[in-house]
Image 1 (cartoon, helix red, strand yellow):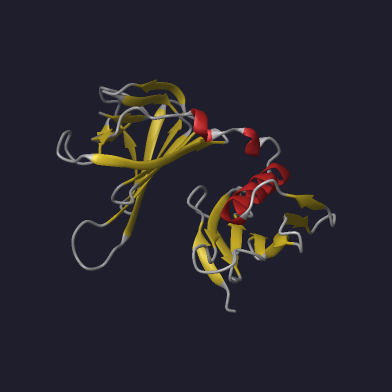
Image 2 (tube, one colour):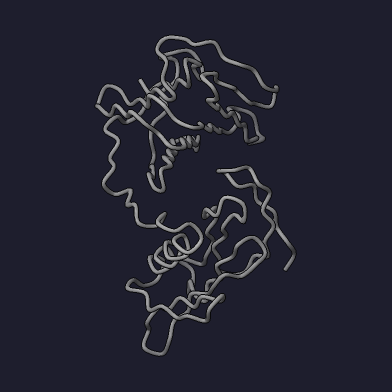
Length: 230
């Protein structure tokens, strides 16, 4: 098969890999899982290759006893997985996360529950659209490895690195401070679905906004949160 390239949603690295029927891709730069593709619902999900860019890290297989196994290429170790089918792939992915980034696979996002369903969104006082004009409904979210990722119903994606000072009520969800915020969305209207991206980075008390229009330093506006969903 031909080489494909995907952009890492966390560090923006261009990751090259060779796809197969079932595979999981990790970014070679930030060591995070960035893509999973398999024949779930249509056929067997194994063998499943686990890739670090172009390099193979391991494979999930099934033996004659219908046991799911993770074979780690670096040391030839074979780990019997507790789960099966698609859940076994997620379990294997968490094991590889711990190998690449020790301790990262131990944090469970199931204990974190966002109480607010959605709302207008503001980053460091910079509203995405006018306050109250748009309602961004939360579809699902993950909070692992000190990174909060929220996906909204129009497939907008919010990634918050190292969030601190979280206010989580039914009326407001806000994050007082974070290392970086990334916001991506597809163009509204029209036939072409173009991905747009904005990132906000706090350095030395200044917020740097980076978009396709270039870079700019934001003035402090009230309310001043890394992220506000109100």
